[in-house]
Length: 157
Image (cartoon, rainbow, N blue to C red; front, side, top):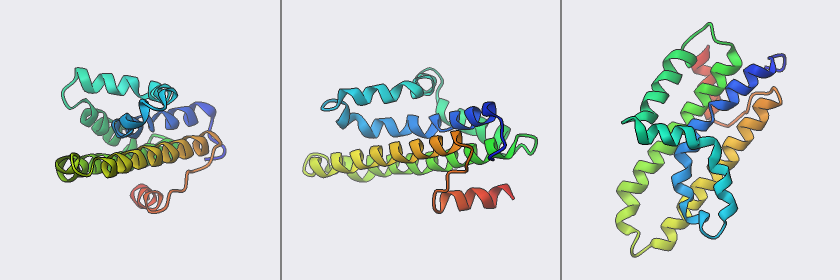
């Protein structure tokens, strides 16, 4: 991916807005004490608005990215790699969101501190993961995330 033009790197980096939009709800507990973190939500605003306007907007975007980009052999490898990696990160975040809502919401009264700590950890982990992937992508390198990148490479070849 080192030789890819800058426009391809920017398009590939744009794919990470999808997982970032699903990570933002985990950070709600941090936005009060650290209001400057709200600035980090700006890139995800279009996707968050899409979720508000279109029913299942996130799912529609997911399917469009998967079918039109990740499975299209005419799209350059770097874009396909990053889109598929962003999709896999998004799947992990959606599954975590479901687990939190099913398993931990009933416990939020008695174990509220633990639940908030876990949510903050997921948010900060997603921030680091998405930030790392975007920076590596803009540098022209594949973001090598254990297990996820291996799964992406198996899907692309």
